[in-house]
Amino acid sequence: MAFFLLLVMLATCAAVPENLSDKMLTFPQKTKTANVRLTTLIKDFSAVTVCLRFITDLDRAHSLFSLSTRHHHNAFLIFWTASKDECAVYVGNTFATFGIKDYKPNEWHSICSTWDAASGLVQLWLDGKPSTRKYVGGPRITYPIVILGQEQDSYGGSFHIDQSFVGMLSDVHMWNHVLSPCEIQRYMDDLNFRPGNALNWGALECRVTGRVLNEDKQVPCFLSSH
Ligand SMILES: *[C@@H]1O[C@H](CO)[C@@H](O)[C@H](O)[C@H]1NC(C)=O
Image 1 (spheres, helix red, strand yellow):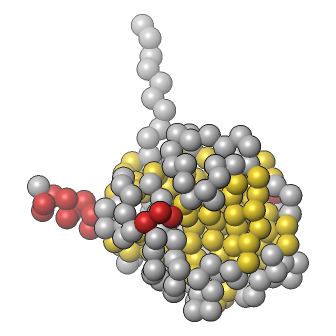
Image 2 (cartoon, protein in one colour):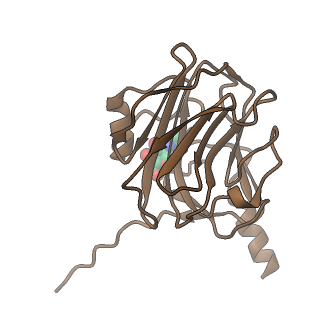
């Protein structure tokens, strides 16, 4: 049994790019250790778009996407605050919060966030709906460490159990530019979209620590009646 579990965990993802298109990452328990570290193909950003899909029933604070640099542990962070109706996006340790009234637990959601250094504006999209655009400023991002499942309070570590993610994550993409509203809509609708040039779920290099499982996406099953 222990051997089987080890094999499952080793197969979760790897140091060579892997196509996770039909997969989701399952974070099945609250820990301060379980995480997936992603390797970005680009190391220097003056703009960012991050998109991902998630499902959870957490009603406490939790991290959805944690990117740190040597200088800022919240260099780009998508974070649900303790209030269920509020999501924060941090850039260079500064943040903007976005009120989200129709967020529901136990449902898959698509979320995207954009930022660019030139305007200093961030925007959050949830399930096809754009937020207002808010100012956070923010320096360039260099040599990022990206972690799913935990929130970094230092460069690559210092996790807090009460900010851990429990649930499933999928379709994580990151670009080094701001996607147009039309491109974001294509992602949200799961149509053909150009995959991320910095993180591509279809060719992802990652490293798993702890109990995180790489499972087939659970797609709706349409039973035929006779
Ligand atoms: C990953 O697999 C999907 C189908 O399973 C395919 O459409 C896609 O092109 C593949 N991506 C890459 C980068 O090979």
